[in-house]
Amino acid sequence: MKDSNIFFLGIDGGGTKTEFVLCDSKGKIINNIVTSGCNPNDIGIDKCIDILKNGCLNLCKDINCNNISVFAGIAGISVADYSDRVLNLFESLGFYKFGCSSDTKIAIKTTLGKKDGIVVIIGTGVAVIGQKNNEIKTFGGYNYLFDRGGSAYNIGRDAITYALLCEERQKVGSPLYEAVKYKCNTDTVYLNLKRFYSEGKQYIAQFAHCITDTYQIDTESQNIIDYNMKCITDIINYVQKSYLKTDCIHFVGGLTSQDDKLSHHISKYLDNKCDLHFHKTSIINGALILAGLKENLC
Image (cartoon, rainbow, N blue to C red; front, side):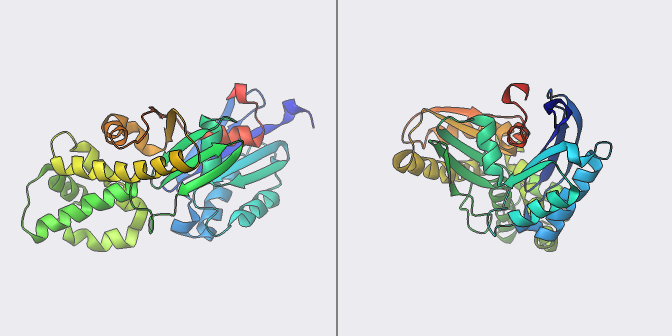
């Protein structure tokens, strides 16, 4: 098949959203959609497959899948080795070429390419990734049950915990408490407890905005950010000491938009001072490159 007849589909599946982008061989975007998150550890592998299937069919409805090369980077896919299910889906849809991995691979491809370096994912979840001699190693990234802190989920959980303790001790009135209560839209935060449990990780992660929105006026918000960034920096320090030392740390994910609030707390705990590069654009380009699109066209 001639290269000019091939289309490229990149998929970035995270805990909060899944992004699909379809390009032609010149890098021109033909179609793109964003749907709900597809981390199989959050929603189950069957729902993950449904999201991927529906997204692919909607995006590629005007183009024969036999002319499309696809690559998907999906958060959580490596925990229970769900990749076979995803590859079987792509094969059943008739894609010309197909592949998948965790989202760490597309994060590395977007930020470092083939260079050695360290990338930190700070979105709904958190992970530190090192690439050395084209080999990738992940530190942390155990999902919300076991990661100490640093993700939107961790920060949102800490905001909710603080608000619940405020009510228990009748210390209401702080800006952070009021922000959490307002987002709950209930008379008390405690009355929203059932919803926290029923909607889980993705819903709780939304409360991270209560921290960032009150950061300038509430010392508790600053303390929560400080603790969570220290959790990240502890891992970075270990990676720098034991695996790879670098003069620049790259950050990707939804929390990069808050770099003005995060960077100071990260820098002060780093053992080796280095530049912090917050990539505020999507890492979908890494998926497109891995699907076969030339890097200079992304």
